[in-house]
Length: 591
Image (cartoon, rainbow, N blue to C red):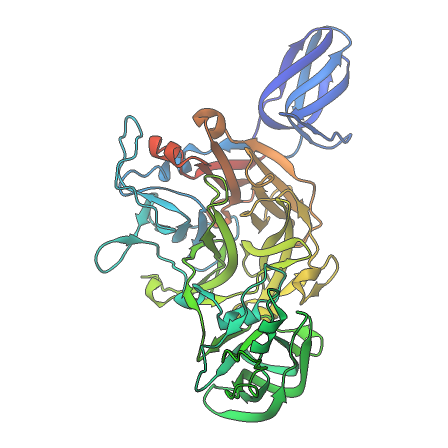
């Protein structure tokens, strides 16, 4: 892309020059000026001599009247991409969505600079379904909102075809739903494998006086276990409730959950302070471990004078020396309280590995204590895998796993899956995420060998120098990112061999930004705002934009296709104007 240098008349004294959009400035010639400020709205940009500085306006003191000429430096210029935006202005049934990600179904290659157009799957988050008035933009009832939908761009076509999932009776729903196994709350066995600092849960409790009582742990694959750490049942309401804790039990191991090896009888200590633990030293390799608890009151538990007939646990951890396994699921043959959590999922990024699509969706529940438009709470991150071939995506054959990728520790929340960079030559898939502290997001990086993508204990986290297996040691590598973003290798142009991160600056703002990294883990340049979205000014009221990201396989290194989402905090506003809730596209072009 070539731009003509810009010349402006100035008068002696203080001047402000509006450049019309954000531009990369190499130098300014003409009359002598001093005290120059490079501005993007209220953000003053750091000026470094002999380097490009971005600005949408200039403020300075001219020592005399005359002209100045703005000479462009090397950098990017962002422009609205009307053609791509119009592809998603759909009016028949599918009438808006957010969370847009794209996937190359032809060969899985997500690099820039591909010669031929590939069959592309687009996935969306919350989706509006229904009719609206083309003149007034008023949405009509019934207005449906499934949590996800998809679209396809065929290799030989320029049009995007939208698809909605229907149940057997024709009702509209999402293609991706939370697995009922993970949509539970109460005194459920999965509570015993929540290992982070989230709010205290209710632990696991058996039913009253069960005839048999066992809880089984699945470590995803055969793992060498040197010790098991048990935190027995405890509730801070009263130490009397600690008598529900298990006492005498037998431990069994299995490779296939069919043939079991008796590993001996053990006794778990009562937990009167919430901190007492019991450790069992082992040295065995199994995938499954089962606790078979003696159901005799006072033997299988610490029965007091009430003797409720309940058997419970708070936490069970499996270790290989100091490494704690996190990819653990728990089931039990008896439970006191189990009911639907009424969760749903919001898709995050994913990756094509072989003939499967993998996603890292958030699990979400309603939270009416939050402001309108934000009445939800994220409770976890799952993995969904979906097989496909050239003719069909087999949504009905998808499988789902709970992941340990939402983790809270000492006031910091770690979350993975906001961006995924497919396999490089090193054989790794890079899964990006962020830490969240008081609403500020900072990028973190993990990686996993492609063939191990479903084994969550194989994921490594960048600690600033090395990759380690402890997510708590992940070091942030880039500030001011959004919840969804992208990181992509640059194959051509002025940044060839480097990596570009594209994101919305500080989550929900009108600013699209980028940073250049020397490697998949950085170091990254400081965030550079490159585009201001116009929708907040255009639609007013409570409109906001968010989650900018690149679509590499649909663009080239020197003309990057970028999408961002537009929404409003007011559902009434969405009903009144169907133009608001749609993805928009811009193009970052190198000059």
